[in-house]
Length: 304
Image (cartoon, rainbow, N blue to C red; front, side, top):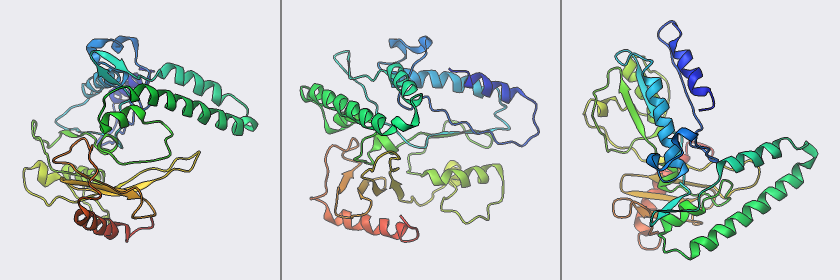
């Protein structure tokens, strides 16, 4: 809504040589979220995240109208998920971040001279800690599941990282050229599978040494063996974070400290506990051993 949507449409309307590749990476759903007036009302959702999603969906529609679907492959996905920091209880919103106020603070902070960075950093984290404690006080009075607490308490610069479904499960949509409409695939796939799938669908030969696997057979309703997904958190830039790595299959999610295997161990049965409320680290040591073997097989090839 800040003008980028119109620029994308103008670019697509230009007569360019074909074939071409057009990549768009919007940050509209990143915190802090500021919803345009057009979508900032209840009919588009109960919180900023839902309303911003509606706005983004509207722009996707406008963008897709500019292309010939018979000759264009469209891929819609995300590089990560996000904790939604709002919850509606009895019709009332609980803890909703003021995106506009956060942007104002960031703008003021960015305009301060560089020699004030140490003071600015200290002040920032002091304010963040105060806000976190205030949220904890509000949440302590509510009857919430572990999953609901995680969503509300998640901070932008939390040092204790994790790999819960909210953070890693993303949409993946292929539509247009060479794609059958209406097909839903429920098998687990991975981000690294997207690149070879695009090459396969558009008919570009792939002799590259890559980790991903083409999903074209799945799209053509053939069977392929499901691969375990490797998971890893991004370290913070401005302070040291407690990062984790892990493995996900359709049935189990396992993650632990990046450097110390028996630290911060988490295991969840995704079939019986999709919201990851019950950590099975003590009950299912057999599964942890199997998942750790899968993890070691992957990280053994790389420097983690």
